[in-house]
Image 1: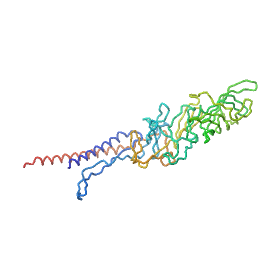
Image 2: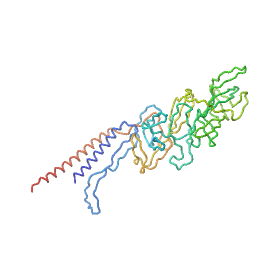
Image 3: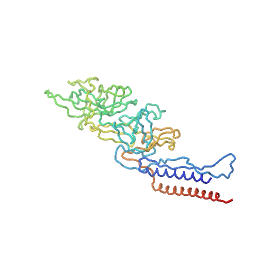
Image 4: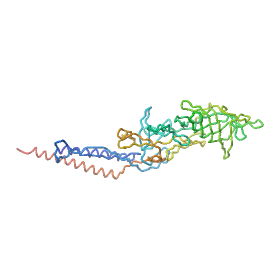
Length: 417
Protein backbone atom coordinates (compact mmCIF):
# COMPACT_ATOMS: atom_id res chain seq x y z
CA UNK A 1 0.00 0.00 0.00
CA UNK A 2 2.78 2.41 0.96
CA UNK A 3 4.47 1.64 -2.37
CA UNK A 4 1.54 3.02 -4.41
CA UNK A 5 0.99 5.93 -2.03
CA UNK A 6 4.60 7.04 -2.43
CA UNK A 7 4.32 6.55 -6.19
CA UNK A 8 1.64 9.25 -6.30
CA UNK A 9 4.05 11.47 -4.39
CA UNK A 10 6.77 10.82 -6.97
CA UNK A 11 4.38 11.69 -9.78
CA UNK A 12 3.36 14.86 -7.94
CA UNK A 13 7.00 15.89 -7.48
CA UNK A 14 7.69 15.28 -11.18
CA UNK A 15 4.64 17.34 -12.15
CA UNK A 16 5.77 20.12 -9.82
CA UNK A 17 9.24 19.97 -11.37
CA UNK A 18 7.76 20.18 -14.91
CA UNK A 19 5.75 23.27 -13.99
CA UNK A 20 8.75 24.96 -12.37
CA UNK A 21 10.95 24.08 -15.36
CA UNK A 22 8.38 25.60 -17.72
CA UNK A 23 8.29 28.78 -15.62
CA UNK A 24 12.08 29.08 -15.70
CA UNK A 25 12.23 28.34 -19.44
CA UNK A 26 9.73 31.15 -20.14
CA UNK A 27 11.24 33.74 -17.82
CA UNK A 28 12.25 35.70 -20.94
CA UNK A 29 8.93 35.29 -22.80
CA UNK A 30 6.92 38.50 -23.19
CA UNK A 31 3.56 38.45 -21.42
CA UNK A 32 4.12 34.97 -19.91
CA UNK A 33 2.26 34.20 -16.66
CA UNK A 34 3.76 31.82 -14.12
CA UNK A 35 1.94 28.62 -13.20
CA UNK A 36 1.58 26.96 -9.80
CA UNK A 37 0.21 23.52 -8.92
CA UNK A 38 -2.66 22.60 -6.60
CA UNK A 39 -2.57 19.06 -5.14
CA UNK A 40 -5.23 17.28 -3.10
CA UNK A 41 -5.29 14.18 -0.89
CA UNK A 42 -6.55 10.84 -2.16
CA UNK A 43 -8.76 9.01 0.38
CA UNK A 44 -10.56 5.67 0.01
CA UNK A 45 -14.02 6.64 1.17
CA UNK A 46 -17.12 4.45 1.48
CA UNK A 47 -20.33 4.38 3.51
CA UNK A 48 -18.72 1.78 5.77
CA UNK A 49 -15.42 3.56 6.28
CA UNK A 50 -14.29 4.21 9.84
CA UNK A 51 -13.02 7.49 11.18
CA UNK A 52 -9.48 6.10 11.01
CA UNK A 53 -9.05 6.15 7.22
CA UNK A 54 -5.51 6.40 5.93
CA UNK A 55 -4.91 8.50 2.84
CA UNK A 56 -3.82 6.88 -0.39
CA UNK A 57 -1.58 9.60 -1.71
CA UNK A 58 -2.03 12.80 -3.67
CA UNK A 59 -3.37 13.95 -7.00
CA UNK A 60 -3.11 17.05 -9.17
CA UNK A 61 -6.31 19.06 -8.80
CA UNK A 62 -5.40 22.02 -10.99
CA UNK A 63 -2.66 24.18 -12.42
CA UNK A 64 -3.23 27.82 -11.57
CA UNK A 65 -1.84 30.75 -13.53
CA UNK A 66 -0.84 33.97 -11.82
CA UNK A 67 -2.08 36.86 -13.97
CA UNK A 68 -0.33 39.63 -12.05
CA UNK A 69 1.49 42.10 -14.31
CA UNK A 70 5.13 41.66 -15.22
CA UNK A 71 7.76 44.40 -15.37
CA UNK A 72 7.98 46.85 -18.28
CA UNK A 73 10.72 46.83 -20.91
CA UNK A 74 11.05 50.02 -22.95
CA UNK A 75 11.60 49.54 -26.69
CA UNK A 76 10.53 52.90 -28.20
CA UNK A 77 8.85 51.03 -31.07
CA UNK A 78 5.28 52.20 -31.71
CA UNK A 79 3.86 48.73 -32.41
CA UNK A 80 5.30 47.34 -29.17
CA UNK A 81 2.50 47.73 -26.64
CA UNK A 82 1.64 46.64 -23.13
CA UNK A 83 -1.47 46.95 -20.99
CA UNK A 84 -1.03 48.99 -17.82
CA UNK A 85 -3.75 47.13 -15.95
CA UNK A 86 -5.65 43.86 -15.94
CA UNK A 87 -6.92 43.74 -19.53
CA UNK A 88 -5.79 41.66 -22.49
CA UNK A 89 -5.16 42.55 -26.11
CA UNK A 90 -7.62 40.84 -28.45
CA UNK A 91 -6.25 39.05 -31.52
CA UNK A 92 -8.03 37.06 -34.22
CA UNK A 93 -6.72 33.97 -35.99
CA UNK A 94 -6.65 33.83 -39.78
CA UNK A 95 -9.65 32.67 -41.78
CA UNK A 96 -13.17 33.89 -42.39
CA UNK A 97 -14.33 32.66 -38.97
CA UNK A 98 -11.16 33.31 -37.00
CA UNK A 99 -11.08 32.66 -33.27
CA UNK A 100 -10.61 35.56 -30.87
CA UNK A 101 -7.79 35.06 -28.37
CA UNK A 102 -6.60 37.10 -25.41
CA UNK A 103 -2.92 37.93 -25.05
CA UNK A 104 -0.56 39.99 -22.91
CA UNK A 105 2.24 39.79 -25.48
CA UNK A 106 2.16 43.12 -27.27
CA UNK A 107 5.14 42.62 -29.59
CA UNK A 108 3.14 43.27 -32.76
CA UNK A 109 4.49 43.18 -36.32
CA UNK A 110 3.11 43.84 -39.81
CA UNK A 111 2.52 41.14 -42.41
CA UNK A 112 2.93 41.43 -46.20
CA UNK A 113 -0.45 43.21 -46.44
CA UNK A 114 0.42 45.69 -43.66
CA UNK A 115 -1.96 44.06 -41.18
CA UNK A 116 -0.78 44.42 -37.59
CA UNK A 117 -0.28 40.86 -36.33
CA UNK A 118 1.30 38.78 -33.57
CA UNK A 119 4.35 36.61 -34.25
CA UNK A 120 2.02 33.70 -35.12
CA UNK A 121 -0.06 35.78 -37.57
CA UNK A 122 -3.09 36.68 -35.44
CA UNK A 123 -4.66 40.05 -36.28
CA UNK A 124 -4.78 42.81 -33.64
CA UNK A 125 -8.38 43.90 -33.07
CA UNK A 126 -9.38 47.57 -32.86
CA UNK A 127 -12.64 49.49 -32.59
CA UNK A 128 -13.71 51.37 -35.71
CA UNK A 129 -13.62 55.12 -35.05
CA UNK A 130 -14.35 58.40 -36.75
CA UNK A 131 -11.35 60.56 -37.56
CA UNK A 132 -12.11 62.52 -34.38
CA UNK A 133 -11.68 59.31 -32.38
CA UNK A 134 -15.31 58.56 -31.55
CA UNK A 135 -16.02 54.81 -31.39
CA UNK A 136 -18.97 53.69 -33.49
CA UNK A 137 -21.91 52.04 -31.74
CA UNK A 138 -24.79 50.54 -33.71
CA UNK A 139 -27.02 50.40 -30.63
CA UNK A 140 -26.90 46.62 -30.27
CA UNK A 141 -25.75 46.83 -26.66
CA UNK A 142 -26.65 43.19 -26.02
CA UNK A 143 -23.96 41.93 -28.41
CA UNK A 144 -20.55 40.69 -27.24
CA UNK A 145 -18.92 43.95 -28.34
CA UNK A 146 -21.65 46.14 -26.86
CA UNK A 147 -22.66 47.27 -30.34
CA UNK A 148 -19.20 48.55 -31.22
CA UNK A 149 -17.62 47.64 -34.56
CA UNK A 150 -14.39 45.62 -34.25
CA UNK A 151 -11.95 45.14 -37.15
CA UNK A 152 -8.35 44.18 -37.97
CA UNK A 153 -5.82 47.00 -37.74
CA UNK A 154 -4.19 47.67 -41.12
CA UNK A 155 -1.50 50.33 -41.65
CA UNK A 156 -1.61 52.31 -44.91
CA UNK A 157 1.61 52.99 -46.81
CA UNK A 158 0.12 56.09 -48.41
CA UNK A 159 -2.72 58.44 -47.59
CA UNK A 160 -4.95 57.13 -50.37
CA UNK A 161 -4.94 53.71 -48.71
CA UNK A 162 -6.47 54.92 -45.45
CA UNK A 163 -9.74 53.29 -44.46
CA UNK A 164 -12.17 54.97 -42.09
CA UNK A 165 -15.68 54.00 -41.04
CA UNK A 166 -19.05 55.52 -41.79
CA UNK A 167 -21.47 56.24 -38.96
CA UNK A 168 -23.11 52.88 -39.60
CA UNK A 169 -19.78 51.12 -39.11
CA UNK A 170 -19.21 50.33 -42.80
CA UNK A 171 -15.63 50.87 -43.92
CA UNK A 172 -15.04 53.43 -46.64
CA UNK A 173 -11.78 54.49 -48.25
CA UNK A 174 -10.30 57.97 -48.34
CA UNK A 175 -7.59 59.48 -50.55
CA UNK A 176 -7.86 58.13 -54.08
CA UNK A 177 -11.57 57.25 -53.77
CA UNK A 178 -12.26 60.69 -52.32
CA UNK A 179 -10.12 62.56 -54.84
CA UNK A 180 -11.51 64.85 -57.52
CA UNK A 181 -10.51 67.53 -60.00
CA UNK A 182 -12.26 70.85 -60.38
CA UNK A 183 -12.00 74.62 -60.59
CA UNK A 184 -11.85 76.57 -57.34
CA UNK A 185 -11.70 80.22 -56.46
CA UNK A 186 -9.48 80.99 -53.48
CA UNK A 187 -9.53 84.64 -52.49
CA UNK A 188 -9.24 86.37 -55.85
CA UNK A 189 -7.32 83.55 -57.53
CA UNK A 190 -9.00 81.03 -59.82
CA UNK A 191 -7.26 77.64 -60.00
CA UNK A 192 -8.36 75.36 -62.83
CA UNK A 193 -8.05 71.58 -62.80
CA UNK A 194 -7.00 71.60 -59.17
CA UNK A 195 -6.69 68.27 -57.37
CA UNK A 196 -9.07 68.11 -54.42
CA UNK A 197 -8.80 65.35 -51.83
CA UNK A 198 -10.90 64.83 -48.73
CA UNK A 199 -9.61 62.46 -46.09
CA UNK A 200 -10.95 61.39 -42.72
CA UNK A 201 -14.36 62.96 -43.23
CA UNK A 202 -17.28 61.37 -41.40
CA UNK A 203 -19.88 59.93 -43.73
CA UNK A 204 -23.25 60.87 -42.27
CA UNK A 205 -26.24 58.59 -41.75
CA UNK A 206 -27.70 59.57 -45.13
CA UNK A 207 -24.54 58.04 -46.74
CA UNK A 208 -24.43 60.96 -49.19
CA UNK A 209 -22.88 63.71 -47.03
CA UNK A 210 -19.34 63.80 -45.63
CA UNK A 211 -18.30 66.37 -43.05
CA UNK A 212 -15.05 67.24 -41.33
CA UNK A 213 -11.79 65.58 -42.15
CA UNK A 214 -8.92 67.27 -43.99
CA UNK A 215 -9.52 68.81 -47.40
CA UNK A 216 -6.44 69.50 -49.51
CA UNK A 217 -6.21 71.50 -52.74
CA UNK A 218 -3.04 71.11 -54.80
CA UNK A 219 -1.84 71.48 -58.39
CA UNK A 220 -3.84 72.96 -61.21
CA UNK A 221 -3.09 76.07 -63.25
CA UNK A 222 -3.60 79.79 -62.77
CA UNK A 223 -4.32 82.10 -65.76
CA UNK A 224 -3.05 85.67 -65.31
CA UNK A 225 -4.82 88.75 -66.71
CA UNK A 226 -2.42 88.85 -69.67
CA UNK A 227 -3.22 85.24 -70.51
CA UNK A 228 -0.04 83.75 -69.02
CA UNK A 229 -0.64 80.30 -67.56
CA UNK A 230 1.39 79.14 -64.57
CA UNK A 231 1.28 76.12 -62.31
CA UNK A 232 -0.22 76.41 -58.84
CA UNK A 233 2.54 75.64 -56.33
CA UNK A 234 0.52 76.31 -53.17
CA UNK A 235 -1.12 73.63 -51.03
CA UNK A 236 -4.33 74.77 -49.33
CA UNK A 237 -5.86 72.83 -46.46
CA UNK A 238 -9.15 73.04 -44.62
CA UNK A 239 -10.83 71.11 -41.80
CA UNK A 240 -14.30 72.56 -42.22
CA UNK A 241 -15.38 71.15 -45.58
CA UNK A 242 -18.65 69.49 -46.53
CA UNK A 243 -18.92 67.14 -49.49
CA UNK A 244 -21.40 65.00 -51.35
CA UNK A 245 -20.31 61.41 -51.75
CA UNK A 246 -21.62 58.28 -53.40
CA UNK A 247 -21.19 55.21 -51.17
CA UNK A 248 -21.38 51.78 -52.71
CA UNK A 249 -19.99 48.35 -51.76
CA UNK A 250 -17.98 49.77 -48.89
CA UNK A 251 -16.24 52.56 -50.81
CA UNK A 252 -17.07 56.22 -51.36
CA UNK A 253 -16.53 58.48 -54.36
CA UNK A 254 -16.36 62.25 -54.15
CA UNK A 255 -19.01 63.79 -56.40
CA UNK A 256 -19.21 67.40 -55.21
CA UNK A 257 -17.77 69.86 -52.71
CA UNK A 258 -20.53 72.01 -51.24
CA UNK A 259 -18.40 73.92 -48.71
CA UNK A 260 -14.63 74.42 -48.69
CA UNK A 261 -14.47 75.89 -45.22
CA UNK A 262 -11.69 78.30 -44.32
CA UNK A 263 -8.55 77.46 -46.29
CA UNK A 264 -5.04 78.00 -44.99
CA UNK A 265 -1.66 78.21 -46.68
CA UNK A 266 1.70 79.36 -45.33
CA UNK A 267 0.12 80.73 -42.17
CA UNK A 268 -2.56 82.79 -43.96
CA UNK A 269 -6.28 82.02 -44.26
CA UNK A 270 -8.49 82.42 -47.32
CA UNK A 271 -12.13 82.10 -48.25
CA UNK A 272 -12.80 79.79 -51.12
CA UNK A 273 -15.55 78.44 -53.30
CA UNK A 274 -16.15 76.07 -56.17
CA UNK A 275 -16.19 78.28 -59.25
CA UNK A 276 -16.22 78.45 -62.99
CA UNK A 277 -13.24 79.95 -64.76
CA UNK A 278 -14.81 83.40 -64.82
CA UNK A 279 -15.26 83.39 -61.05
CA UNK A 280 -18.99 82.71 -60.94
CA UNK A 281 -19.90 80.62 -57.92
CA UNK A 282 -21.77 77.49 -58.92
CA UNK A 283 -23.30 74.59 -57.06
CA UNK A 284 -22.75 70.84 -56.86
CA UNK A 285 -21.65 69.01 -59.96
CA UNK A 286 -18.60 71.08 -60.89
CA UNK A 287 -16.24 68.61 -59.25
CA UNK A 288 -15.67 65.35 -61.09
CA UNK A 289 -14.17 62.13 -59.74
CA UNK A 290 -10.48 61.81 -60.50
CA UNK A 291 -9.43 58.91 -62.73
CA UNK A 292 -5.78 59.26 -61.70
CA UNK A 293 -4.52 56.70 -59.22
CA UNK A 294 -2.14 58.47 -56.87
CA UNK A 295 -1.13 55.35 -54.95
CA UNK A 296 2.54 55.51 -54.11
CA UNK A 297 2.71 59.31 -54.20
CA UNK A 298 5.67 59.96 -51.89
CA UNK A 299 4.19 63.31 -50.88
CA UNK A 300 1.52 61.35 -48.98
CA UNK A 301 3.65 58.48 -47.70
CA UNK A 302 3.18 57.25 -44.15
CA UNK A 303 5.73 58.93 -41.91
CA UNK A 304 4.71 58.00 -38.37
CA UNK A 305 2.43 55.79 -36.28
CA UNK A 306 1.55 56.62 -32.69
CA UNK A 307 -0.67 54.91 -30.11
CA UNK A 308 -2.22 56.87 -27.25
CA UNK A 309 -2.96 55.61 -23.75
CA UNK A 310 -6.59 55.32 -24.84
CA UNK A 311 -5.47 52.88 -27.56
CA UNK A 312 -6.21 55.21 -30.47
CA UNK A 313 -3.83 54.60 -33.39
CA UNK A 314 -2.91 57.74 -35.32
CA UNK A 315 -1.23 57.69 -38.73
CA UNK A 316 0.70 60.79 -39.86
CA UNK A 317 1.64 61.27 -43.51
CA UNK A 318 4.40 63.24 -45.21
CA UNK A 319 1.95 65.95 -46.24
CA UNK A 320 1.01 66.54 -42.57
CA UNK A 321 -2.43 64.92 -42.70
CA UNK A 322 -3.40 62.67 -39.78
CA UNK A 323 -5.98 59.91 -39.49
CA UNK A 324 -7.14 57.82 -36.55
CA UNK A 325 -7.12 54.24 -37.79
CA UNK A 326 -8.99 52.77 -34.82
CA UNK A 327 -8.79 52.25 -31.06
CA UNK A 328 -7.12 49.15 -29.61
CA UNK A 329 -9.77 46.92 -28.00
CA UNK A 330 -9.14 45.27 -24.64
CA UNK A 331 -10.90 42.23 -23.18
CA UNK A 332 -11.33 40.16 -20.04
CA UNK A 333 -13.36 37.27 -18.60
CA UNK A 334 -14.89 36.66 -15.18
CA UNK A 335 -12.77 33.58 -14.41
CA UNK A 336 -9.27 33.90 -15.83
CA UNK A 337 -8.18 30.50 -14.56
CA UNK A 338 -10.88 29.01 -16.75
CA UNK A 339 -9.07 30.26 -19.86
CA UNK A 340 -7.42 27.72 -22.15
CA UNK A 341 -3.74 28.41 -22.83
CA UNK A 342 -2.80 27.97 -26.50
CA UNK A 343 0.85 29.04 -26.19
CA UNK A 344 2.71 32.26 -27.01
CA UNK A 345 0.98 33.97 -24.06
CA UNK A 346 -2.41 33.46 -25.77
CA UNK A 347 -5.61 32.22 -24.15
CA UNK A 348 -9.04 31.36 -25.51
CA UNK A 349 -12.43 31.47 -23.81
CA UNK A 350 -13.96 28.27 -22.42
CA UNK A 351 -17.23 27.36 -20.74
CA UNK A 352 -15.67 27.78 -17.29
CA UNK A 353 -13.98 31.12 -17.99
CA UNK A 354 -17.19 32.96 -18.78
CA UNK A 355 -17.86 35.00 -21.90
CA UNK A 356 -15.45 37.55 -23.32
CA UNK A 357 -16.07 41.15 -22.29
CA UNK A 358 -14.91 43.83 -24.75
CA UNK A 359 -13.72 47.12 -23.23
CA UNK A 360 -12.13 50.42 -24.24
CA UNK A 361 -8.65 51.29 -23.03
CA UNK A 362 -8.18 53.91 -20.31
CA UNK A 363 -11.91 54.13 -19.52
CA UNK A 364 -13.11 50.70 -18.39
CA UNK A 365 -10.95 49.65 -15.46
CA UNK A 366 -8.91 47.23 -17.58
CA UNK A 367 -6.03 49.67 -17.87
CA UNK A 368 -4.41 51.88 -20.47
CA UNK A 369 -2.19 51.09 -23.44
CA UNK A 370 1.52 51.88 -23.20
CA UNK A 371 3.16 52.19 -26.61
CA UNK A 372 6.90 51.66 -27.03
CA UNK A 373 7.05 49.10 -24.21
CA UNK A 374 6.58 45.37 -23.63
CA UNK A 375 5.48 43.40 -20.60
CA UNK A 376 8.04 40.91 -19.33
CA UNK A 377 7.07 37.61 -17.71
CA UNK A 378 6.08 37.73 -14.04
CA UNK A 379 8.53 34.96 -13.12
CA UNK A 380 10.57 35.43 -9.92
CA UNK A 381 13.66 33.31 -10.63
CA UNK A 382 14.74 33.29 -6.98
CA UNK A 383 11.42 31.80 -5.94
CA UNK A 384 11.56 29.24 -8.74
CA UNK A 385 15.03 28.09 -7.64
CA UNK A 386 13.76 27.66 -4.09
CA UNK A 387 10.86 25.63 -5.53
CA UNK A 388 13.38 23.36 -7.28
CA UNK A 389 15.06 22.56 -3.96
CA UNK A 390 11.72 21.80 -2.31
CA UNK A 391 10.63 19.57 -5.21
CA UNK A 392 13.93 17.69 -5.09
CA UNK A 393 13.44 17.02 -1.37
CA UNK A 394 9.89 15.82 -1.97
CA UNK A 395 11.07 13.45 -4.69
CA UNK A 396 13.87 12.09 -2.49
CA UNK A 397 11.52 11.57 0.48
CA UNK A 398 8.98 9.65 -1.60
CA UNK A 399 11.77 7.58 -3.15
CA UNK A 400 13.02 6.75 0.35
CA UNK A 401 9.51 5.66 1.39
CA UNK A 402 9.34 3.29 -1.61
CA UNK A 403 12.78 1.93 -0.78
CA UNK A 404 11.81 1.36 2.85
CA UNK A 405 8.58 -0.38 1.86
CA UNK A 406 10.54 -2.61 -0.50
CA UNK A 407 13.00 -3.57 2.26
CA UNK A 408 10.18 -4.44 4.66
CA UNK A 409 8.52 -6.68 2.06
CA UNK A 410 11.86 -8.37 1.42
CA UNK A 411 12.30 -9.12 5.13
CA UNK A 412 8.88 -10.70 5.22
CA UNK A 413 9.57 -12.79 2.13
CA UNK A 414 12.79 -14.06 3.69
CA UNK A 415 11.22 -15.29 6.96
CA UNK A 416 11.87 -18.99 7.35
CA UNK A 417 8.95 -21.11 8.39
